[in-house]
Length: 46
Image 1 (cartoon, rainbow, N blue to C red):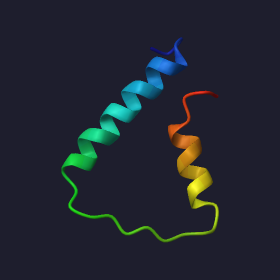
Image 2: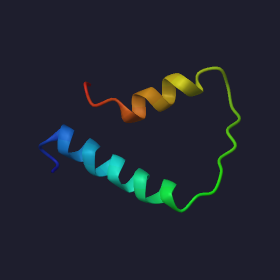
Image 3: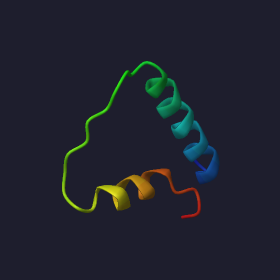
């Protein structure tokens, strides 16, 4: 998995999905770059 960045991102998204299933709600506060930061986290085409 360390050699394959796409596989690593897929596994990362699977963990996020499992965590999200257990959360009832999310409140987000932060700077104006929050959307860009989230897009970078979930971007598979790096």
